[in-house]
Length: 188
Ligand code: IMP
Ligand code: MG
Image (tube, rainbow, N blue to C red; front, side, top):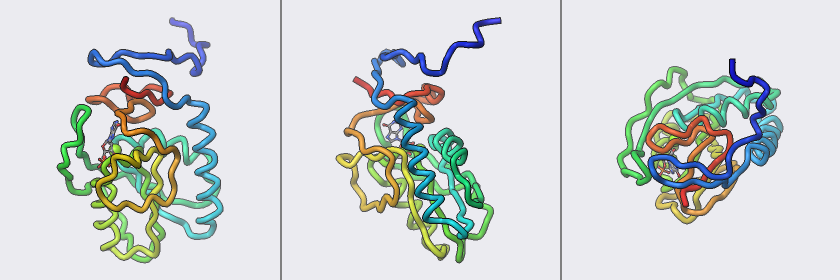
């Protein structure tokens, strides 16, 4: 059996993936602190509103799982799928929303995203969900690349604004790799 006492805090500062070098941009400690703050905001803003958290898969799986550890109000959680990315360049191709089973009409809805890059995805998801006439609609994204935005996107809650660079880790992937990394790394 390998060493089971090794700490989660011993991530390397740099990693190689698909021949590209990545270095730490946000540590898991910084991420966790931010996630507690974001959860506090939801606890405050949505007390007694029983909101629906719409988790955009795959990237937001980890963010959402950690976020709800600090949620102390009643929520419902749903997972949606769509994808617009391959490799390190946005394809600009948006797919339809899959997996939505609850009517959103008159419900308070919070979209949970890992990252808003060009904003194409968030913009389309926002339009599609708004058409269902929720009582309110909000978007919480862990990461925002303000300099990459091409569409108007109203990010109600933002974890970190980051440079317009490709990032991997904490749910975000590079060709499906790196999602399990505990820190967020940036491609050098
Ligand atoms: P957008 O539509 O360009 O805003 O980005 C849509 C999706 O692309 C995000 O939800 C991510 O899944 C993915 N994405 C954007 N930027 C990055 C990145 O830097 N690393 C990994 N995935 C990214
Ligand atoms: Mg995503």
